[in-house]
Length: 454
Image (cartoon, rainbow, N blue to C red; front, side, top):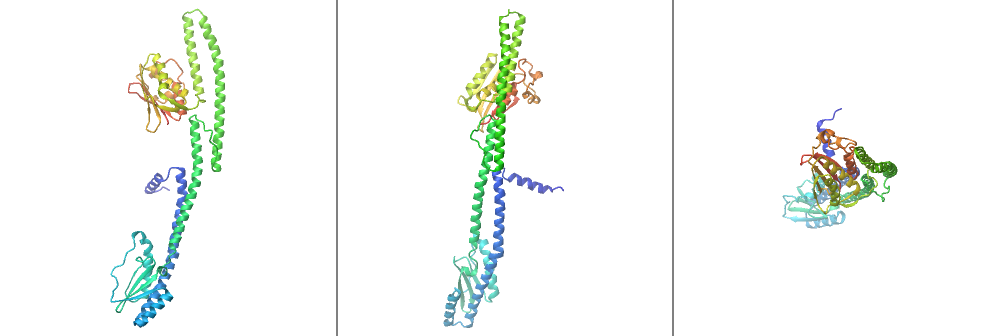
């Protein structure tokens, strides 16, 4: 069955306004039912109990006032009225006074707007009871005196005024019930807030530990706590982190061994060529050997990924100056725009290798290289490398980051290397929690933008 479009719009509107955090949604799940239950209970109490009791009390008060009015009509003498007033005071807690020559007020005093919903049922109940019991015109006020209800009845020669205790007209303890309901709601909400906050904090710590591990940082103080399911997830994360770290250590040890084994025969070959008689063949062999050594270094760097290095505060300018020297040595003209005081918490060797790959790649394809580093509005770090080379078509930007990719059709000048430079650079950037994007450079070539979080 298809839902009406208006209903779908309403659902989308509600979803946009619901809390997005687990803490907010948990509080909504708890507070909303409690609030609805309290409102329903309060409504039932006032509708079925408080108004019923108030109606009975109003009827009783109206009966006593009707008795006083009829008694006065039967014998309006001062002596009879004195006995009537004394009996009403002693037996009914009513203060009865005769106001000769007076008339009923023309208007009634309205209650404050804030308390109008509270006084309206009282006025209706008392007005109904007095209408049923009295034949004479009357006037009453339930708001003038805090502890009394003022009722006036027109009689021959003036007005009979009756002041009745407020509890004679309606149930005065209703506000106590509302107060207790409010206090209970606030107390339950506070307890729920504390418990939910503790559970959400455990999830937040787990997320922070996972994010830190993804950036290569360690969280030795992290321990599973919270609900059983959260502890299970935290324990699974710690086990996974341990397995990954063991795998990295084993791979690093294996690569160190492979590096040693490969470099030994390469060193022997270099020594043999150095002792051999120089000629065109040995020169070609030396170039091939140097290229092989460079390829081995690149393979090992890609596989190693600088995973064992810790993050630390680093000044950005000296790091960029170091990688710029390599570009200048190959003949590129390098321009730097970096704040000398700019610092970042990074793995310095890993970031240096990533920037070296970007800068040397730019120097290999262009004559002018520009490097800029700046702090982003969100507190992160952005490093931009521009060159004036042939560039890369926009549809091949993502292909350039694939391992062993060689975009010969647009940048075929680079015959050295195996196509791992950009792959290593992106791997380093993502290891820091950031990324690298390629764009068209204002210089006409390629722009590489390294974005790292704060």
